[in-house]
Length: 76
Image (tube, rainbow, N blue to C red):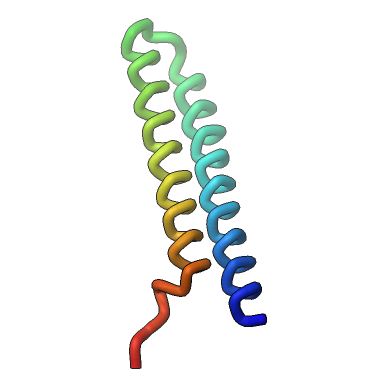
């Protein structure tokens, strides 16, 4: 039962990472669109936002797997 709970917690952490990445994309694109179109600078900004969102999602996924495996427990 403990293993199942640990994996469910890990899945929750991974899902939370994806949600945070999606919120980041929504907020950053809304901010960028409020500044108007600036040509190549805007496109580069969009790429930077996408890379940050991918990093957030990947970190959440890795953290979820580590929680699921039980690698983040304190050693006593």
